Each structure stands twice: as structure tokens, then as C-alpha cells.
Amino acid sequence: MLPIDDPKKLEAALEQLEAEKQRRIDEKVEKGEAVRVKLDVVVGTEDEIDAAVERAWQRKLAELREAGDTRKIYLSEDDWVIITGVPRANM
Image (cartoon, rainbow, N blue to C red; front, top):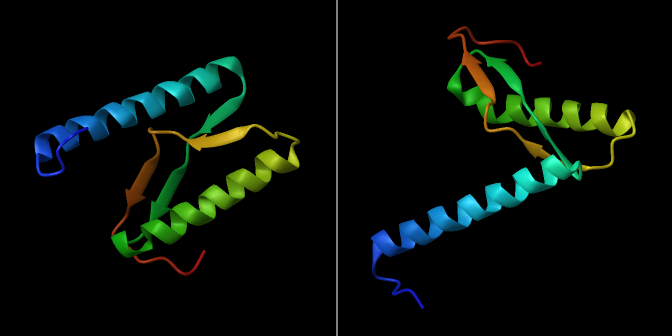
């Protein structure tokens, strides 16, 4: 068991767990059991990011489910969030 007071060992263990999680997701995607989707989001300010990403995720999820896709859906690591610096009206 890892000692809790060693931050380097804890960090290494977390990195190892994250790598294993990604490997399993990649395996499911390769087998066609899951799909990875990419979201591109444009916001005016950083304060808008979380809400905009959630709306984009819900739209994409609804789109895939409406098309009959029942696979597990994961967000891609390649998502884009563009911050224009111009506040936007609620979208």
C-alpha cells in the first residue's frame, strides 16, 4: 500500500490510473462499443465556459441518441474552447 504522505508516489499512482482509464476507453472505442465525440465551443468570457460546454454536450448527446446511437459516449481530449473576449447573450 502506498504511503499517503508521499505526494510523488500519489501523483505517480494517479497518472497510472488515468493512463489505464484512457487505455480502456480507447479499447472500447476501437471495438465499436463506445464513441468519442469532440466539442467545439465559442464563448465570450472564461466565466461562460462551463455552461457552454454543458449545453454543447447535451446537444451532442441528444443528437446521437435521436439518431439511434446507444453506445457509451466519451468526450474527446481534443475539444476546443475559443474565448473571444466579447460577452455573448445567453445561448
